[in-house]
Amino acid sequence: MHAVTEDYDPKTLGQHVLSTAALYLACGLDPQKSTLFVQSHVTAHSQLARLLGSITPVGQLRRMIQFREKAVRGGEDASLSLLDYPVLMAADILLYDTDFVPVGLDQKQHLELTRDIATRFNRIYGSKGKEILTLPAPYLVTETAKVMSLTDGTKKMSKSDTLDASRINLMDPPEVIRQKIKSAKTDSQRGLEFDNPTRPEVHNLLTIYSVLSAKTRAEVAAECADMGYGTFKPLLAETIVNYLAPIQARYRELMAEPERVLQVIRDGRERARVVAEETLSRASTAMGFVL
Image 1 (tube, rainbow, N blue to C red):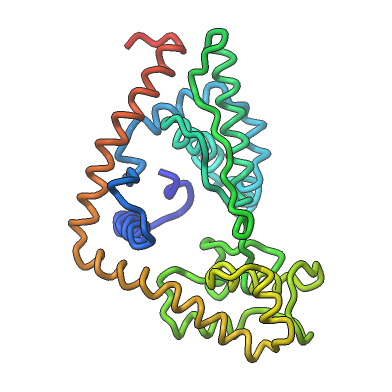
Image 2 (image 1 turned 180 degrees about the vertical axis):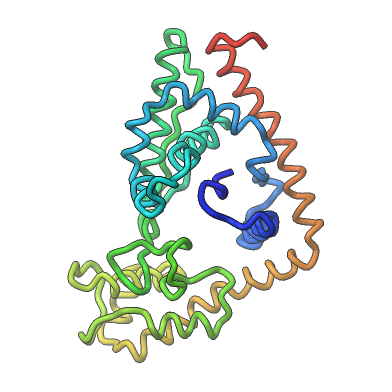
């Protein structure tokens, strides 16, 4: 339901959903430990979002950074769903009595809104000392809380960026990855270093290398201190290629048997419904609905 807040192709939506589920599995999510499902298959998401919307000020939604950025592009055609996006996201989180949410820095504001909504709901509809909705906390992996664009080290890497060269897609072929890293913005200085505010692109590329090579920042700083880009960029490109190779291989296996992926998300749907409907019932009862 988040995917339809802006223009999209209905003919490819289902394929994108399947592809995303396959990527999650290829990246290592274990359906025996994780409940993987399609949000729109569990109607409690839209139902709770409607209830939460009744206590969420429009002014607060208009101040959300992502809405402001996208509304500027959409102008008067910006949809109600775009404005309401964070409320639906709050429902996604709160339905499952979530304690921690893995987020990047760009989503932290949405999680803060989720906490505001839950706090307001508990204050209005809860009894003393009784929490109806669980307040979630952010789970941030510091090194990768905000990965920056390959073409501008001051902007975050984003799949919605119109410039494909700005990011590494999980299914980019090796030759595409090598070309993107070769073309990545850098500077004319020799030697590579972290945390120099005048060299954001260098810091970003070193961070990517550190994370994907499983080396500490100290190890990377020592290894790359005297490197030129002619040495470092091929090293980074091969590190990315090697890191993604098993994910890409597993993804292709899964997409060759789409029924296996569909069965995983069908099973997940049933498990998710049980939890989501219990939370929805609890919230609806607190609001005075007759069930």
